[in-house]
Amino acid sequence: MSHTLGIRQAQKQKTRQALLDAALGLLEEQSLSSLGLREVTRAVGVAPTAFYRHFRSTADLGVALVEEALGSLHPMIEDTVSTAGDSDERIVRAVELIARHVGTHPAHVRFIARERHGGVQPVRDAIREQLARFAEEVGHALSEHPEYAGWSEDDLLMLAGLYVDHMLMAASAFLEALDGSEAERERVARMASRQMRLISIGRRHWLG
Amino acid sequence: MSHTLGIRQAQKQKTRQALLDAALGLLEEQSLSSLGLREVTRAVGVAPTAFYRHFRSTADLGVALVEEALGSLHPMIEDTVSTAGDSDERIVRAVELIARHVGTHPAHVRFIARERHGGVQPVRDAIREQLARFAEEVGHALSEHPEYAGWSEDDLLMLAGLYVDHMLMAASAFLEALDGSEAERERVARMASRQMRLISIGRRHWLG
DNA sequence: AATTCCGGAGAACAGTTGTTAACTGCATGG
DNA sequence: CCATGCAGTTAACAACTGTTCTCCGGAATT
Image: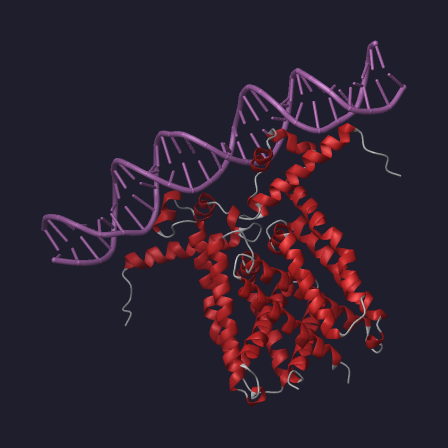
């Protein structure tokens, strides 16, 4: 379906990606609403006007970053939730997965945590939509399990939302501990696991 | 101990408060890291240089806003947690309290949610410290209850952190629903209550 | 081979920013 | 009552911002 792009479109996507990467780097110590278009182009080494060939505004770039940060995560999530195993096993695996992802993509995680409640509405909306999709997918994956036989759709979504929110909280906690000691990171992991387990216990006794 | 301030210091605190109020207003549609000092003074109607008489920088102003937004909340929290009553009653009361507070101080809540992971380190640190204090206070209040007889200090703090995080999540959810319909707000309230109740059930079955 | 398309460069625009310095007028303490 | 202190003003600074218009060179199309 997709025959190799011409050297023209290839070059365009390359600078586009360079702009995204540069922006992500600059956003480690500021919010999107203070990110200047010239700042980004300067970091890449292109003229300020080149920015407009790829994005209408920095807000537009932010929405693209949301897609880049969260878009490819859906299969990963689904995989973790639907995989068989004891409840505690799944929790440990999920927390490990988060820790690993934060370690390999810290800037992406920081961006999402920061802009989820940030000052740029289109970006907030994009993040909210992606997280809602996550919750929906998790809820659907849970509904396949026999454990959730008597659960109403509403309750399933409520639980899924709780899980998603805690994934993000855990990710944010890992992020804060990234520059800390190994022991510090271990402490964060154990704390996150125990909170997850408590929720899991509540889930088990939810009905009746 | 504090005899009435002279008309001089009174005037100073008045413009200082005006700066804080104006900044809080401007921060409804942007992040602190993009808030300009001149922007604030212009909104108040004073010269840009007057800003320096009160704050070293906008980051400094942000820290002051954290104090204003969270400093006065400690007695309120302690009160809610330690008050007697059935577990479900306490949950309903807590959720109602949050809803009311978001309704009366939306800008403050938005500011905290936004800058908790925002781009200005001193402000992030100030918020983290206040939230840690909340967790500590909640944990201490819980430890007084006979229900938590066999709980380790670590587990108590873990649960308290979970509660505090969910207070904030609920507050943020209420904020998003503020401009929505009455039904929408009701839905958010019921969702928050059920999530809290699930956590409460997990807590009840935590030991053994 | 000729023509169109288009990503990027360059220059210029009016506005904005934080920060400095030297000032004014008035409440305060001696 | 007079001298000091200090919140707020005015003016100016270099540096920066987003946006428009015009242009260039090379890939893509015919």
